[in-house]
Length: 106
Length: 231
View 1 (cartoon, rainbow over the protein chains, first blue to last red):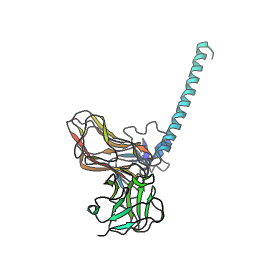
View 2: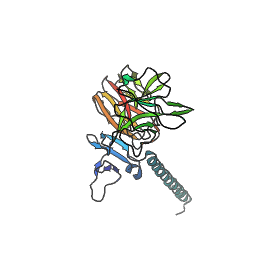
View 3: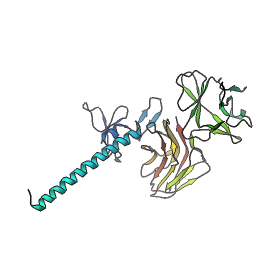
View 4: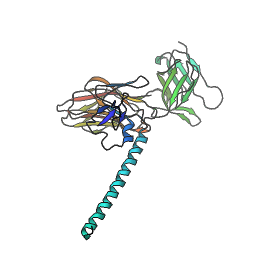
């Protein structure tokens, strides 16, 4: 689930005043994506129309970067690397604990 | 209507740009690298640049340079300009002009169309899955049930391109069908001669365009008539 504001900008979470519109992301486009990636996107749901500032109308369902896509990809890559680092650390911990168990060390 | 000519002052290479009232007024031949714009409004200053002039006056003409283009303006002295489109300033906005470059003994229309009713212009689409055929006036997808029929273009420079337009006809499909570029996608809806726009203002650089008609449970054809870049 992601959330859309009045300009169809995406948000990873609902705001405090709960004014954002939930969007189910049925195809899981944003699954695994970091908050910064999501925040750089715009989603125009099916049946709705977004009017860009220059007067061009876009009908949904449209999912498109609202900000520099290269920057969004870089943010996602950084988040993915952090996830890998966290998993690596968890593997080390589990391996260490398993060794201690095998040695009978509490 | 008489020809309105403008030649930049000074030495060195010159942009030979002239205005004509109609495309039928274009001369049979011209100097290599000549540019023709179709307008009945008197031309002011002429600009050739990747970015729009910041303080234009009514009548000024801007040849938008860069990106994916169909031909080059040969100014001689090893100077080649890549035109994407031409515009004239109305006093409040830039209006697109029909424009041509004389190159290799022929007038070539400057256009932002990637594909236009059978003509592959800025790029050709090729099959990536399913059934895909090039007809005289359209691309044809389909004729196999439970099959994804996809095609993709060559790399196109979407820098400073704000949207891409597709005109197509699509029979009802079981699964969603899409028009995509990089991280942007728009769902295609069924109907005839449908126009869909995809916002690519967040994309800069080279991307391929992808047309994806997915999985009908009947033997149906889908067609694409034109794909166009929009500044």
